Amino acid sequence: MVGMKSDMLLEDIRLVDKVLQGDIESFNNLVNKYEVMVLRFVYNMIKQKEAAEDITQEVFITIYNKLEMYDRKHSFSNWILQISKNKTIDYIRKNKKVYEGNIDEAYDLSSQDMSPQESAEYREVKNSVKEYIKTLEDTDRQILMLRYTENLTFTDIAEILGLTESTAKRRYYKIRENYKSFSKK
Image 1 (cartoon, one colour):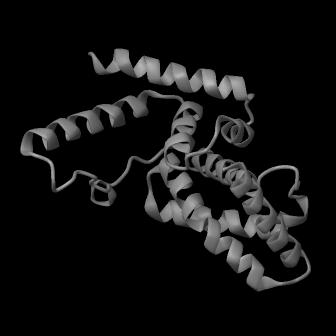
Image 2: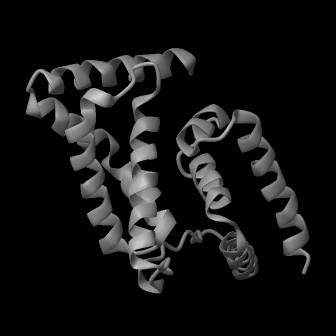
């Protein structure tokens, strides 16, 4: 995994260098590589599809305009997610509210292979988790989202959110522990 991660970092740095030399196709490659990740990250923060798409576009405009500021000591994907987080927070502040997801846009993950009872239990747990997530602070929600949807390490999560690694871990495990109490209500 470590070798794969460093290969990805080297590939990203190679693409960044090409973009800085004027190669627009390399920027398109970066957009294609990270667009879904950014869109999913932003959508999970605001739960509004059109706004998430607009913010994602703004993120890539910002990346293009500030590419020379990218610090090669850090993961390019973490830098992108930091910009995504900041753009989304700016949007939330500007609009003074966080949007709840449209029920039609929610993706139903229940499997066709489940029995009716298993399916009902799954939906109950899924709803319980959704309700619990709504009670969390933004940072805690972001920690969960980055850990589960992006499969990031605590080091990466800490870097993206501006926390220490130990703080990210402590908050993550506290979130999990508090869910046990929440789900028993």
